Image 1: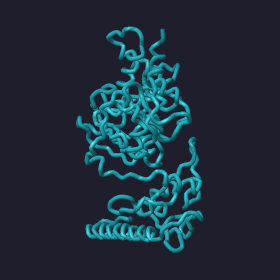
Image 2: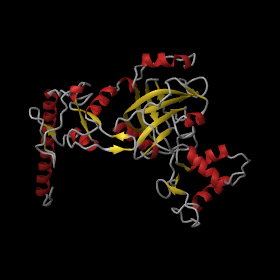
Image 3: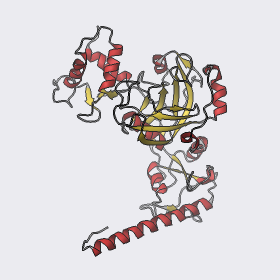
Image 4: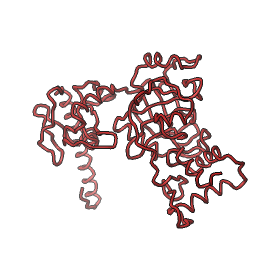
Length: 398
């Protein structure tokens, strides 16, 4: 028979390497074969504490566990946990609509690594996969568009929301996937209306368009992620038709999902590949274990209030830092010369332009106008604030 320590290690592996104490309890209870006594949960907590150098009760022997979010948070992780390389994008020999018998089979195929956690990813790399299995009351699933609730805050898996969620662990990984426009594999379980009758079905690649922290139905804050399929609803329904439940019906769009911003992810990939994932401003290639990181940035922003078009003439390839600064109007690109203006260390440098990339100068003019507006507003506000401080006898340097 396995020891308590071995079962806790197995539970944490199933949960993706780290989990709240309540989740660990539930997973240990699920996998432990013998009948549990009335104090078994205290035994689990004692094993965690005596085998962790983060704890005051550390035995000084095996340092297996760590407090993933610091003392008092109740989140434990498996030290030196490695569930293998994260695989982003499509997998060889795995087709949309393919059915897997259970989570173990899904894990062995590397479609989704952890056998319990709904998010597969790392805070430093992003999330490559999620599973929808009806575990959260705030989830909304329209097949091609998902409002996905992050992890954490439940009294037990699939139970009540009893605490706020934070942007940590898998939630932070999904934020990174949004920021870097990384593809996320989506698998649906038999537990939900849009899932298969049995097992788990792989439904293709989705992208995180937006994330927000809002109050959920139970009154606690949840991390909500908006994901859209790379395919239109009609094509997705056709590919999944053999495995959709007999009572499947296309959802009437609620206001929360109608007013969404859907990007052409193929255009984003095209611009990044055109520059070999190098930033057009700094010419730097950011290497990660799964390839280069770059962002297909829009010069004139999509959606309100800018209403820029999703076309390659309105896009440039940027690294994450220069993307953030460009979107915040920290610098601009001169429309005639393509020189960078207002950016330290790169002022006067021309951006790199591929011969195949035809940038529409009108979009650069629009961005410059927004740059002027934002910088004038900022200067005006600082001037007023400085005058107010002087008037009140204060002397501050800005």
